Image (cartoon, rainbow, N blue to C red; front, side, top):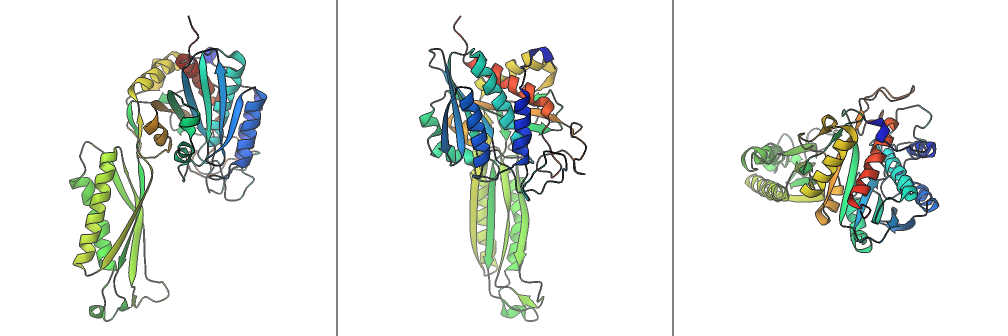
Length: 399
């Protein structure tokens, strides 16, 4: 890591990161967090707009006379997780925790805003986007629906996420599919219940349900292009009652998610799941209802913007520290919605293996969505420096 190239991050921003961690807020409830962020931006002279998607914040920094503009995005929401850490900045709210590092994302972007507000080595307009509800309710889509790109007409948009297991000081990024889509599904089969001793008098919904769950896997192996990875996971099945095991129920249901790296694969999977569920249920004399909820499309990095980020990162941390040949992850991110509307790039910044955690951390590993997770403050300067150098590269001063 080229420490000499890193900006100085004020101690107040480290303290703010821990303050946000201690006061986590769930999707669309990020009022305290949004107020903290807006107040900081205003104190540095930025124009601040509030209220997109309810709690979203956009800080605007205009420099020079250039027409170019870009957006830098951080997410603000926490998860419904009971934190196991017991250090000083552990969550003060039962059942809520920053288990994905969004507190650190906010701090890195705030540190960049502080630096750029003071140096102003830009020619154009920079939008600092603090987004609510990344984890479960597609806050990015809501901000877009509320006019994000109409009110703030940026040429490109960029995002970043901490990544445990990737060494601190490393980055991972590549063009094309970076993260998968996420579609939730629910299948309910309706039959005719009755006595378990007299199944011939019933229309058992459990039999087709089991066949449907097994047949779904054939979609991946026989319908989806083998060069286009996808996964279907049945994560729950419900039928009957533990109170009485002699009753065949009237209905049975299953649910889960499927993930893919293209819109085409998403459409194909949904179509085949519907066909399979209907045909199997019909073969058993049952009726079926299917429902799908797709809040997260595949996250696709754009080639030009990705190349800009890669070259910038290589200068910042060294070529060997920028991993560009990694596989995309099946995890999903609603920043994908922004990349469907604007060119841009999303990168992973290494969060390390967990050795940064103070005494008092929980017994679990330092991985995303784990109750023992904590953002690595050691990467705050490098993440903030990346944002600053990216802004300067995209909005350069006239020569």
